[in-house]
Image (cartoon, rainbow, N blue to C red; front, side, top):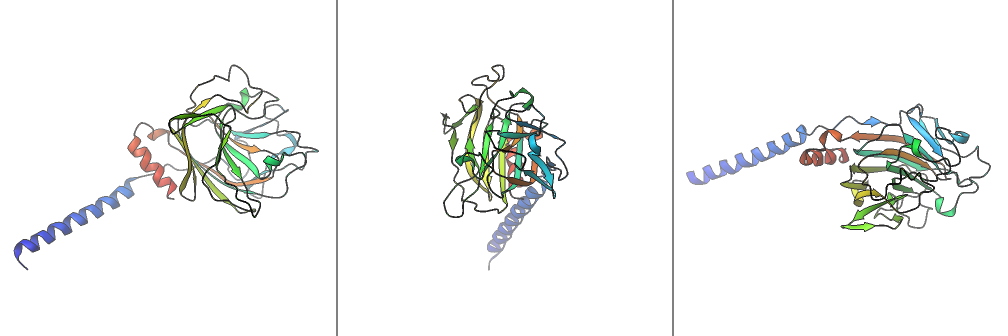
Length: 285
């Protein structure tokens, strides 16, 4: 082996070593924010219920409750569901974040629930302030990450999109239908499912399951129907939604949540490269 070959080999080895060191350092320098536990496992003091036909703050029939360390949605105090759609809003709005939920559907749908509401719930993103909802309003103006359970045999995707009082943009076109299915697999029975939502202001929203993006859209905005009645002062058609309240739903089927966790990314929104790195690191946890 001549001298030139030895020098070339040393140079290549040095470059490879530097590259590997750079990659290690890159991974270790990305620090993710500490997650905020929106559900503390003890109570719902930081949440506000809004159930159709009832005043803001009235947790009718103890619909939303905490038992055995779980946030439960139950209907044992209902004679009939009677379209009393419920929403539980966290008391602080957010704009840039990753939301992580762990949920499972349990038991049987309550009397009076519609067929489409079987094993159906949702995480409402960029929602209106619950204090601005009317007493008989069915759904908050929001973007819904729809949660659905399987019946044991048929395919039924989850982490879908529904748009009560809103529209979104998909592939540079305004999307006005009420719902859009994701590309997820079906989760049958009462198994625990982890759903993640990457919400970056009005620039992009991604629904993530098992580390894969199953739905993506941008420019969430007020518009369309499927939320009524709505206060005209709130219903500002075409207004982009870059922040809002997070809600959990009650739509007539019992559901448990054992984790409602949020990574606040507001501090990174001015640096896209760092924002992307932090989001990637959170999803890889």
